[in-house]
Length: 99
Image (spheres, rainbow, N blue to C red):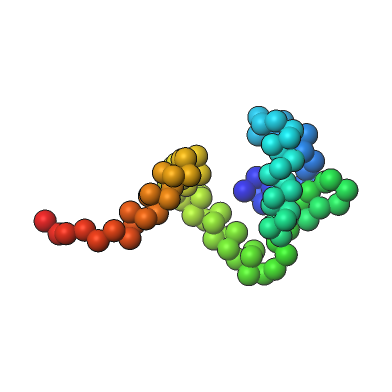
């Protein structure tokens, strides 16, 4: 969401790490992963937001709207342990008896 907010700004791992209070190595991994998923454009280790397809841009825009209106729920989901997220997702499909 940070890079999407202003797609004209270019980021390297050090500047992203400073902005997010994470290690440079972690920032580099995040940037590389987002680049590999066609969410960022990269040029010599400098990244900018840019989706590779219109369909992907629609999905990211939708996620941004959900994030803006459901900040706490999305944040909790992002920061939950993987097993907790899987359980939460599975519970959404659990059939419940009406009382």
